[in-house]
View 1 (spheres, rainbow, N blue to C red):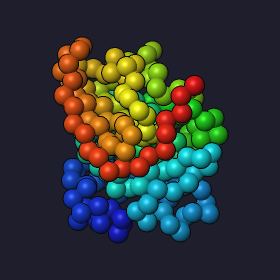
View 2: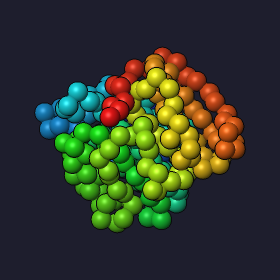
View 3: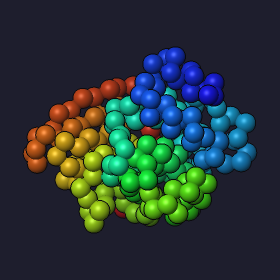
View 4: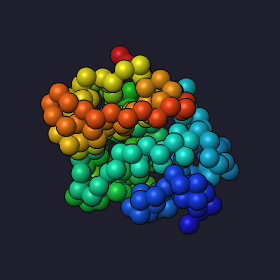
Length: 205
């Protein structure tokens, strides 16, 4: 197990066995530009081009623990970027699950596909990455058990709420907070907010 993963466990950010396994097996170094490989294990956000970043591992661990992904689920990964969160989620859902990544920037969409396929997730039919506006979700594949958003917006897009299953969970950055929603009915949600984070903005077209 890497020093980064050990550190996240020690600090209490990684707690769940399957998420710990995903962090151990899906190497962050596979999802960053070559020139940054020497700092892949450092707990900071790193640039991946086009003004975007791969999130700080601590933040990804925190958000995935909130999201509570499970085997065989269908998950939407908004702002999939270099593909790291997409691959982590794919490992967790397993061969019977599905993960749909949405990335607005074509170069990053292609970079993410290349990286995710290092683990064979696209060939196995677990992952599909789509270029598009993540704030609109992916209505043709809805509803989703889980939705993860890795870029900040000023409010939760209604489309994402609509595309969540009853009992489903959504984790999204709003401003400098991470917000957790659990859908109780078509109109009722449980909500928790965790302040003190920094994210790149969600690109809306």
